[in-house]
Image (cartoon, helix red, strand yellow):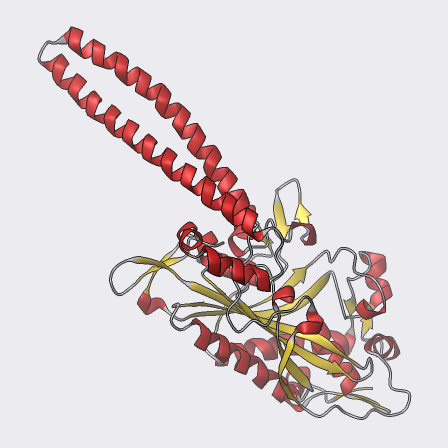
Length: 424
């Protein structure tokens, strides 16, 4: 969430940034925020003055009663009664004003970093890096959903029976390969200095608002109505909320956490061949990295996260590319995002397997996540997160790109985790 001070002082820059995002009605919403903020500040000033006057009169009344000037004290007491009524009205007006203001602020996305290119959709994203040879498969090579059935390692129909579409069941060597990937990713992240966390899989509303999933993505989340809790869409949410309402010291930076969790997304309206098999699921496993950084260091940290994900894909020996997302494809809370995609040879298409983002102060302002700077002043921290990695499409890429006529080979880096080198 943008701070009110930033909006007041940077209207033109904000409108320019929102134009890159193609954000509709930007000027009218920003003008309304500025107008309501002015009303809020005026109301707050009036309320402070009334409270100050009331406090002064209360002290005066006490002195008058002590000196025996009861009649004079009672006259002033009548005035304090009027002040209380006026204070009550102003307090209610201030509360309504703050509520309306927050509703508007929640509608405004983050301002893109200057590196974010203009564009309307994923077709306008910039490819900034590509690495790895695309393998030449044997005749009759299969997409991963057919391989899963052939080798009996993932059962989509059984998952549909138990729960519904988008909830696969991993079996035998498929389950072991899934577990191997999770352990490998966590080990890589821990070796890079990330502290492993095992967070809850359910969050409350405050956590959803803190990282920006609510109200923006409410329709994509599974809601447990009776308890008003939400199943997490990513470990980013509970991990980042560890630091909600926390005041850090500069010496605490950088804070680096990693977590494995199942993730749950409704993905309403997702149908068709492009979401077949593991391409898009309602429940999937993911290993996440989250960083809390000093504002001066956050973009250096973002580059480090990108290089870290690159190192994993290099060890898996998968062909991949990195995209810089354009304004029209940028997530609501992000200032700058790099997407990683793996090439699926059997499907002849790129599959997104990671997003690495810097949110700058956008989440921190919602979370009230601050630190004391060198001058002793309170300042908002920067938050970042990245998939390291999301398993379904990584697994799809491994199955398809490593298939041979005799079975599916296992990348060398994973063999010590799986205990086998081929799925036959």
